[in-house]
Length: 207
Image 1 (spheres, rainbow, N blue to C red):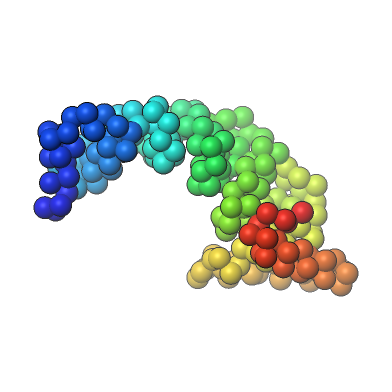
Image 2 (image 1 turned 90 degrees about the vertical axis):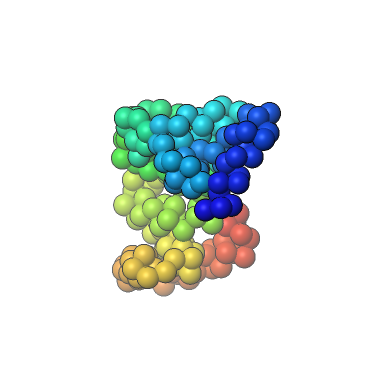
């Protein structure tokens, strides 16, 4: 707590110019959100996250999207959340890419579009996001937004399993194994080879 108080004093009093920087605004927003070193103020946290986001700070752009998704310091606003998820996703933020995919998948804040959902899940999956890899596997397995392709579905379930833990890993393994039971031996061998290449390439060569 002492460290938090000292930091808040530095940001708010000792260095007012620095306090206008995006990094300082982000840090202050985090402190207002959690109550670290100052009184908790969700509305001020939202304002500062947005101020930092408007200066182009990537993590703030994702944070302000989450704020609108969760209704922190304001009413829920899925459409505004989608705007900021897209800004961060296009800049390469993996969490934003996954969450934007989920918004298109469910039609929350945007017009439901399974092809767009698959596109953003694929970008996040290519950065090693296991949840996106699982959802992409589900889309290939069910022909939702992409053509049905058991080979690619098995591939994505396979690469996701080692990145997950607990119940999530069990469910991904179950999905993979149920799919494998329906595949021809040649398809299964192809999927396993593709998964190996995918992992070794850091998820860049997965098609």
